[in-house]
Length: 222
Image (cartoon, rainbow, N blue to C red; front, side):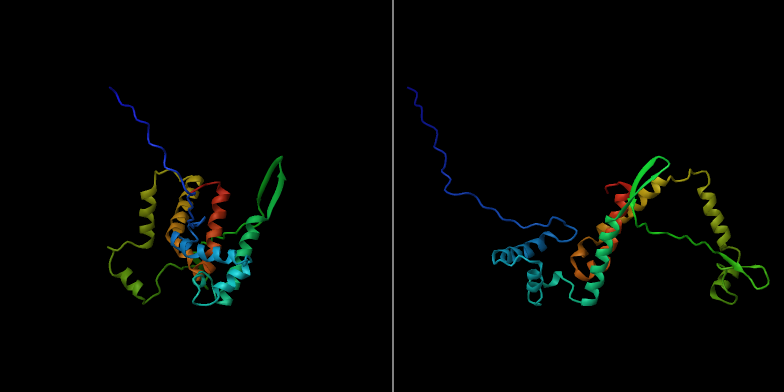
């Protein structure tokens, strides 16, 4: 005779599972550890009805506060850093619309100007030219240069470098831009954790903003 038993009844759920975990929406500003430290304090303030930004600053003002380390308390640095943040928002937001030659364009109104200065020579009093790269007579560089013909001169070294690159195709503008953006991304990754330091953020926030702006202009996502 075969015995058939009923399946066990499902365990009754007596209550809902409640999970609360604080995290940072921008890991380059606050780490997971920071979020676990800051989150409960912000939650407590909100529960007490202190929902203004001024309430957060006032709570962080005492040195014993858990939030104190995340603010810049040097008024001069804080003021200058805030103004630079305002300038960054301004330059990223204000754009110019142009129509030229039947082509429409929208671009930032503010574009940093890069000036390249190449000056290896300057006129000498007698009308000749003075090589600015040449060592001064009697200097250690001059003695080293005159010690023998074994050491390559700056001109010959430059010629060798030029000969080494001869035959190679010129790097495209796109490749140069991509290489520059990758270098900037490496810098960002190197100093990302330091952005949690208020003094560091006050000084370098405009740099991070400028890198983001450069990436946006290129349309890249690094």
